[in-house]
Image (cartoon, rainbow, N blue to C red):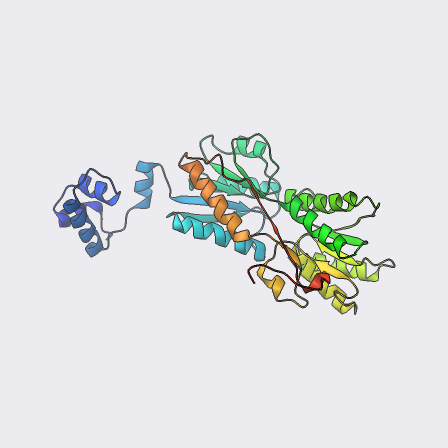
Length: 338
């Protein structure tokens, strides 16, 4: 049978109340009593009953994350960052996926209610108004990659617009004038912001450059299909900027299959700087998003909301970093931290 708090009390020769105070770190217990309780608990291999404890504290010591996908290097890095910060805070992480569907997102949010103390939400189908309508008033949540609106929910974003602006300017500075973009799914905030940064950079040249836009879905296959179309085009671009690294890698393979040399015939760049970006040939020029840091920052923000100690000075926009490698045709590579 499982060891109970009463067993610990008998072994330590103290009251059940004293055991409870000692195990919960309360100050109104002597050091001698605390020592005896801890020794007895260790000897008996006592494990607290989390369900009973949650009834008393009204805390589950768990947080939930609802993400649009669970596969791919971006989300693996993101979950890793959230989980590391959660474990450091003594919290358990429950993860669910919306599978790119609004009804699935709603079902995931409903399933986590009552099981977690707070939620991290990244979904193109969930906005602040939806959360206000769906979540209990006292359940804290932090939104990731969402439009900034007046809401009780903090929002934490990557500077997708600034990163795309910087990359497009870099390609222009290398002399590329016909630049194609393989964009992410339309209607997703991060994808739309990256597309907007690309278009703004072209417009700011004042040269009347015509944008070449292809739609993708952030997968390698969509990048490969876009690369095949570009390779077969009569007026092939001299540079391709993919809105994420996996599409850029798919595009690299399409060009290789078509016998088009990168970067001597066409430059290629991506976004995110997932780990594989530095191991493809040629190494991929990209915009570095510190993905694990995004996860850690989101978890820290959520804990502050749960503890009702929000930091008004905490940044809500994480910067990006241009990482120049061989695929863009620059004469020198610069990639900090490598």
